[in-house]
Length: 138
View 1 (cartoon, rainbow, N blue to C red):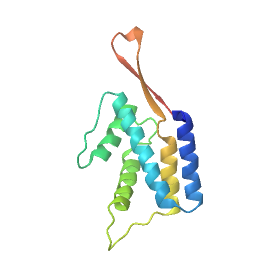
View 2 (spheres, rainbow, N blue to C red; view 1 turned 90 degrees about the vertical axis):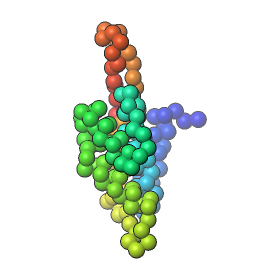
View 3 (cartoon, one colour; view 1 turned 60 degrees about the horizontal axis):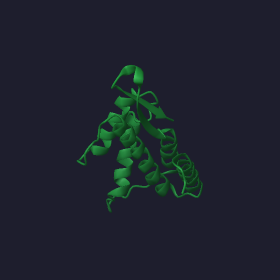
View 4 (cartoon, rainbow, N blue to C red; view 1 turned 90 degrees about the horizontal axis):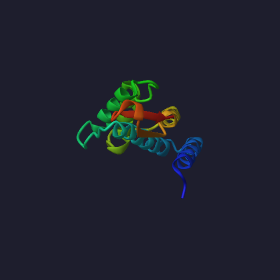
């Protein structure tokens, strides 16, 4: 069984391979999954959870950006809206106007997946009493 950092490294390598083999739709959708799960981890680490509802993915990204103080810009509004909007067009196909993913779209998505936090860890800091100290790993 792969440990989390090793598993992530393998996933990123597979994403790059998918892009190199012109499997742009697969690379995009998989990158989106990594990106969204990273945002959920940030939110959960902070004691929050966005419930399933219309707009929940964008709310998850907005909360993660706020929690992180948008330090990396990875979950900023433009990135999140672009990722989510393209993913929705891929997931909910309109037969009259099917969405295609370009190589640039896939490469951008892979880069955001790579830049998203690997894990969020919470630990109590003795010097601050019962307060929660948040530490993110990139």
